[in-house]
Length: 148
Image (tube, helix red, strand yellow):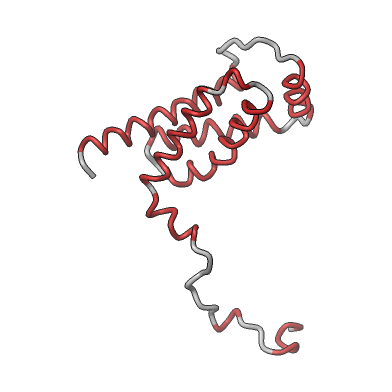
């Protein structure tokens, strides 16, 4: 990896980490003012809020994953945990609030770039079959062994 590639990767990791850390904290501290939702957005957000657990779980996950990215610790794990959140952010904006699509697309670009830079870590997850043989202790031979 060249010095420039290292700097770009670091900048992408810090930027993505900052986005999730700041917006995750905002879910608890409300320091970024947001207009009240209306229409389908209000219905969707109201349903999630009514569950009582969803937003604390979501925002807590964003804060933790953002901190992992900012600290350069467990980056592949943070990217894996954030992937379904990013997918939901993109779907939300695509279907309910298309005017705000710029930030979700930037998040996708940063996440995809970081996943690409960590592709060696993700490669084993994308294998169709495991190379590991079944250990002898896990084999079940006959019905007697299964019943025991």
